[in-house]
Length: 371
Image 1 (cartoon, one colour):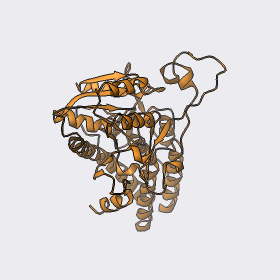
Image 2 (image 1 turned 135 degrees about the vertical axis):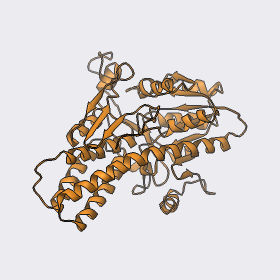
Image 3 (image 1 turned 60 degrees about the horizontal axis):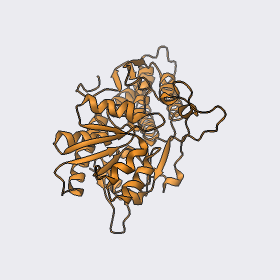
Image 4 (image 1 turned 90 degrees about the vertical axis):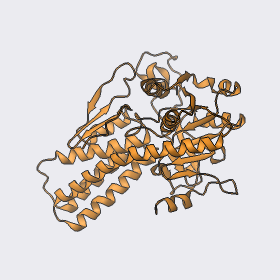
């Protein structure tokens, strides 16, 4: 099987036994794909930001291991040995980006799949085949999930902003086809608004220091002929004050049980600005981004990136521009408190606040799991 053929950009190109990842570090100036032969290749690709975006990371990790076991020769072991092998590799892959819960969630589900397969068969090949099938289903489901998020998100904003015939939306980082298997989460909402002729303009931040907005989101918006404008991260407040933004839609790397949301550094600032200017601030993310095991954002592990991303141009890949010897603090994410979020858009619907002005995420997930 292969990824769905469409007009959107593809960060993941897969067919059974073969995986290529678009090297997003080189965009928008160069489009090149890296061959991913095994879990080790994927670990480095995820760690080094060849592939990024919580959904894409999870799928790339799963497919890399599917490719590895498909091409594995001479595995001498039982079905239980195959399970041990896969679990070890999955845990290794999860260590590449600890904040994005989608990766850990995918690993947990895949562990359950292979353990169940081992209970029914004694051959290692049966376990490996079960893993491959499950990883491929994750790829298909992500595209369908994103399109559902786009539809629910557009409907939610239509209700929130019913006085507007067309709306302008600000987004942060990259949450489109390059961050998922296809279509996108927050950018998927923008795509749907554009398709339904409800979008006046999309604004994207540059998203310092790795510039995912200027390099990737702007690239996708131009590719899809969506009316769009790039702004400096520091320009968001002035843009909102001028009344040029009607809503802010962002993605998520992890959502706590109370609705606190970890996303790319700078998201929290936008939420505060949106709140001050009475602009709806909305999170768009699949249910796999929700982590019910943590009660609040205080428990979310925040990954720190290389100082070079701030010291050098092009997110650390170019020449040095900062003074030698300066210390650097470079967290990859921040946490937006739930009280600043108007709604959390998922593929099963929108999580809104109860009469007590709090999210009942646990109840929503429980009901969604039965649909």
